[in-house]
Image (cartoon, rainbow, N blue to C red; front, side, top):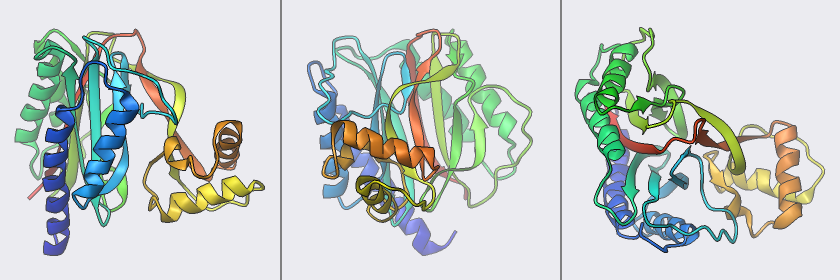
Length: 288
């Protein structure tokens, strides 16, 4: 890997270390999810990083893709299992990391399972290792705790301005023989559940990403498309980041128009299909 690229990844990692430590101190009972998200995102920028995606704060049976809406009134409660997924980027080079907190308590067996699985998988991520071998370690580690890996969620590669690149490494067992290579940057992202082990798409939709330019009628839609490409650099962005463009029905209509013409991709909230609790842990590794 080019030395300058490596420096940018390391800067993202160093910033994310500080942001994670900060975030752990504000995920607490009675905290508004909107306040927590905005404080974390502001901290990334204060430390000189860019946002690789909106901070995800997903609670209990919600596994991923919940970020607060405009004027969101959701408040954290005692015993909420809260997943915080933070992406920091430096000129597009991303550190993607996540942790889980049980509000008001020290820990939870699901948290221990997810963290242990990331630790064990990270130890074996080397050049020449096959995808199915990493998945086997993730699945077997979680199962030793008596829980299930979420089969249809995956660890993933990272690339410049690309949050999900190759290789894709499922949480569940598989037969994928693709080999990990020197220079790969991989987010080992594990989800453990006491539910059935699958997620389904749900509502609301609060995160979007630029895909391509398309002609659209609404001025607000044209402005959003321009922002998604230039201000957000083609990376995922939050609906609440668009409050200066429009709000309410007008914003929803503009986003719908962009989805309909396939100018934007949407990220539905992902919910454990049997309403099981979900814990997440994630770390980013450079294969050297």
